[in-house]
Image (cartoon, rainbow, N blue to C red; front, side):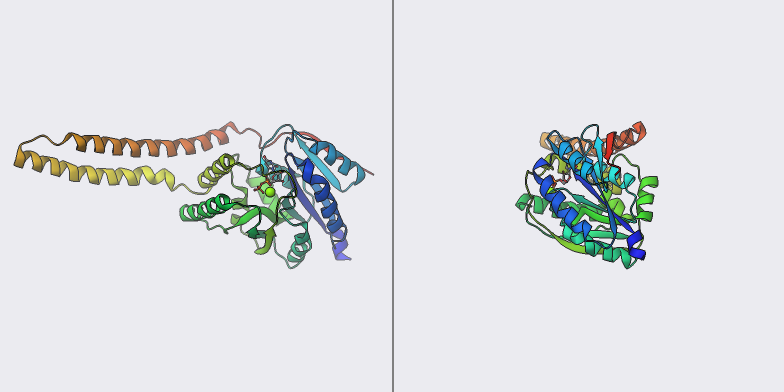
Length: 314
Ligand code: UDP
Ligand code: MG
């Protein structure tokens, strides 16, 4: 039978999830055992400081289809997903969170989409039961700005829940090794046969969100730098604007001197100075952000470091 030879790899990033792991493991194995494809479950332990790794080792010891990749420290959610994709051997790969906000119940639907021939499946968040007012607003604003600035248009409400066929994963492994990146953006911009499925993000099973507002801001800036160079050109546009304003001010000042014979006002100078310095500093700051990206790329440090991989062979 054709299906029996196919395999789905599920990649799960884990950072201090000792409270969710048991329930997640139980739920997902139950679903995977009933899928028409064979499976492989890859947990990436992203430097958890709690008992997560002990639990994961136990899961792996009891099931040879479970692989645990243990990082040397915390490298972040995207690095964990990349490591999982690097180590996945399935015909289709699903990336998801360990807190049951990404429902494992969607996996059979994902497999059905793979069977229809789709190669990239983006899971779109219908509603997010866990997102507060601020998170909803900032997330909306983020996608607005990103889509405004980037030549590539992104799906609103996309998530780190997505699925890739083996050939797409190979492209990411080979050609998308950027240190500053926006993985969801890569997934949506590589092309291939794409489709979307909707899911509702439930509440976190246990524990709390590992994404602080600071982390989210950093993440947003990286995404922007990774997909748009428009802010870099702000220097040119603001330069032209300031030059035009300066020209008007110059004419005004000369006319004033000729007519009234008086020197131009003190306030005008202060306002003009403040405005010009503000524009200059903002533009330098933006260039700084992009230089930071270049710097990270040039250093070419690893995206993640693996301490050990656990897998039982029986
Ligand atoms: N995560 C990770 N490394 C990190 C932060 C988070 O691997 O540095 C994992 C976390 O364990 C979870 C997923 O990424 O499986 C999403 O994190 P979280 O649920 O905290 O984010 P939210 O759902 O609030 O956006
Ligand atoms: Mg979550």
